[in-house]
Image (cartoon, rainbow, N blue to C red):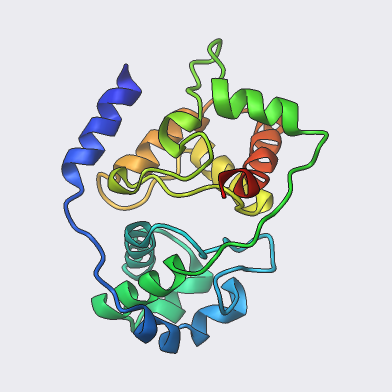
Length: 205
């Protein structure tokens, strides 16, 4: 029940939507390319894929990083000079790019699918699909990102940060929800569900 209440609160609180120019964003994307790839498909598993991500989510996260409310030291200097329109343009561009399919580790699929689709009732961990969708497509209006096809390494790193209690900005409901979701996850569970998520992209096409 508490997850439903939190989700409703997020839906009611998010009223701003990104209105960017994808063509303008493409011309500004060179700085992002070194880590995220020119089309948003990063080739380094520590850096997230941006291709196909919801534009509002990209706007929100880039703004938090620029303003120092989400600590990503490697990015902060690169985005420090971006204004709101720059960020919206970049978000529009990357959101329109096609994410490249990835594959899960077959040895982890069963455990990852069980957690993603059913959660862990014994620990009070909800199913990931409740907020991120059966195919990992996310819920844009609630601020829940698309997960499908994301690098397992990046997803696992983020889950471990949430487990440690990391949140972003003031009253950032999605990250606060995630600290509760990840609180009791073991390293093995994190690795399994992160791998399963990486393989969801093809299933969601």
